[in-house]
Image (cartoon, rainbow, N blue to C red):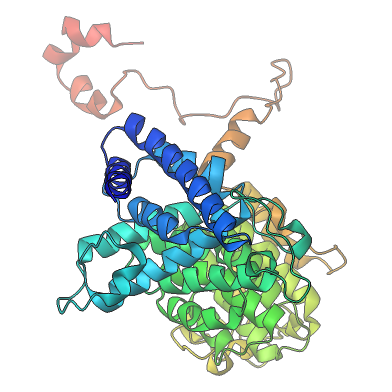
Length: 472
């Protein structure tokens, strides 16, 4: 009995060291705890006659990692790179235990018990501590975000910390079933999404949703509510939710009412200044690719982008013009927007444009009765590349569609670098028609021309030695 108590005390100390401020104590403690996990599992396997995983011990290790005020980067990297992304059984039970820890905290309060799985017996009445919830959210997500290996086939489940379980002739062990790995992955993420999160964490989750989360979910449609709420949130959150929402709609045949109406609303004057605009336009190009969409809808998007181009920076306009061109190539019914005859009609201008920019429903915006006078305006843009792009609409639509990838990543920086690298033709001084540009109509007599008049009318000032210094 004394040996057992000593062992328990030793394990408790190691768990405490996981929360130490010094990574030099955290990392050795983690290694010893996982070595003890292997020893405990070997003992249980010997006693039971079949492969056993000592999850009572591992649960406490997981809790020590997640509920850790000093969860350092070295500790995270040690666990993720050397254990979690290497061994399928450690990943499986981590996901299972993390979901359990989160749900128990949400259901039962904030008490921290040393008994591991016996946390089920907690009956605390107080609400969960917000700091602990935030800590649990940040630590869990920092590990999940670093997931590099997740099986997509049962043959890929072949890395085990405690030893490979022998397949049963009757029933395949849980740890060898792909469905079970997907199940614990789904439960962990769905539990995590219940926790309060910072805007930064919210955006990071949405950024990885379509690549790291949805493909490994057992039932991806369960994420629909989260993505719908995110899409309805507005601003950059709505833009980031598009990827995940598109995956559910396109690959899992889910429906979202008024999807295009909401997408249309995301085209506001802030759009061309957000960090994720290139990501957004890649998706918009996919959403508007179908030739079965109503012409009124496509015309509304074209007109909306045309209007936004008037107030967009140059690197934003060079995205909008190729996008508009491609949409008109794809939907020839919208050609009337640039070929509208003005005979017997007033010239369509901003003050009498039938298009209503403030209308939230694209089908009711009146865009199909308007014209692209905004594109005509851009043909006189101060930036030559924008003006050249806009003039493509004056030509016949025989040019192939633009590759949007050539335009999506432009910024003020790339535009500036392009301009300063532009080669300038050397001037031929012998040719009178090839002169440097004039900087003034007349060569000024003084460096400060605004003082010329007073100087010329005041002999005392005109003879001043100071002004003579500035005379050319």
